[in-house]
Length: 204
Length: 346
Image 1 (cartoon, chains in turn purple, brown):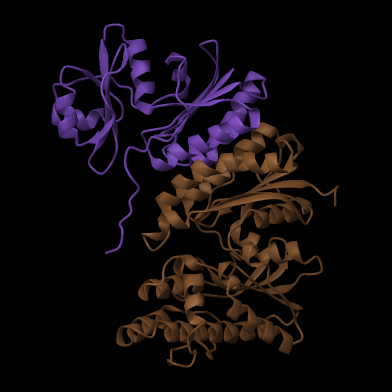
Image 2 (tube, rainbow over the protein chains, first blue to last red):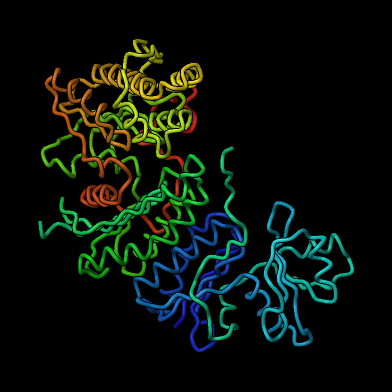
């Protein structure tokens, strides 16, 4: 039994997965309040599944809101510690890419973009073999050029469409924890993927 | 004390990551990781840098504390985590960690007010300290006088209307280039100085208003240092003397307003300043009050005091749900009248 956690963006999302099947799932679009909702929500999942622990934990390590990334990571590491379970990481972009490519057999790839605020998107290209480019924070104008010829998904879709209305899009805004089941079995250890450095200036 | 519950304490509300295991008044194991080095070049705590460090350090630290004590989570009786007030990114890391451990190990959660951790910490080291006592809480984020009437029961008698006293130390250290954190740096520098060398203001001292103010004092230090750039030691000593006069004047006023207290207690990071301790000891002695100041390590942020506050609350039947909010602001006495200009530090 695997526990998947995704709180990096607007969803407060968690799932119990066993043998590639969803045993129990919650996916709530709350935007704020992840630190309050996440653990009770996982409590509901465990109760629903009638289990007291999972054997592995996978958490979305970003990109997304710095706070959301940390809420997920803190919970994942604590569950891993308490259960003696390994804690692996996946990314927001790969979760959306996996979901879109699973649902759309006609697509060879997908360009995933999330609104990163400050006039930028977090964006990355995927094909059926996996990531087809590096994750970056870039202006929508630049992302729209990079997305040409690809189908766009993620919460940044509207920002790219505003630049180039001809882009093909899929309406899949937020990553979902249960889509961890679609990822490969080999996953890296969970480390936060902030993309941007902290806001801090050394005084003159 | 073997029958006392075993409490895991977690603290991450500012720039210290800490975990502790406490049974009764015995600290079974504890770790504290200071982030001073990460923040030093910025001359102050950068919230995002602090939060990133907390999420990196906390879980391995809890694991190390459990290993050192030779216990598993199953043997822990309750989990106490700071739920505020403080830098919210860091608070969330500690609180969510505590909640997840509580759910995974099926243990009660105590969402601790960090200020209550400081307020009750003297009882961790002094079993004879009874309620009510007068608490002078002096730290980088707070400067308050509280009548501690019992667990969860506080009457605020005074607060700062501008800077916290630890903040004033940090700013003075910054003005004179003494380094970070400012408290110990100013104290060291003041050792070689003449506290009467410069006449600095004692804001609000002697007034009817019960509160503290340090902004004017800080500005006076800035002007004095600009005029006397080679007199850092004398300025530091004169500043420290002015702070002590403010603290004692306000403490005497609070004692008059809380006639039932039998002890004066000082806690918070600034309570580790030896000159401030000496002045308050003298003040308490002169009024035949018991004086308690926790040891220096217990005055700065730590998880043992959070575990202790958790133990006191657990004993009082006060536990929290797993939806307990992380709170950037959380006054100990929410009923207190707002102080003029106090803003977030009320």
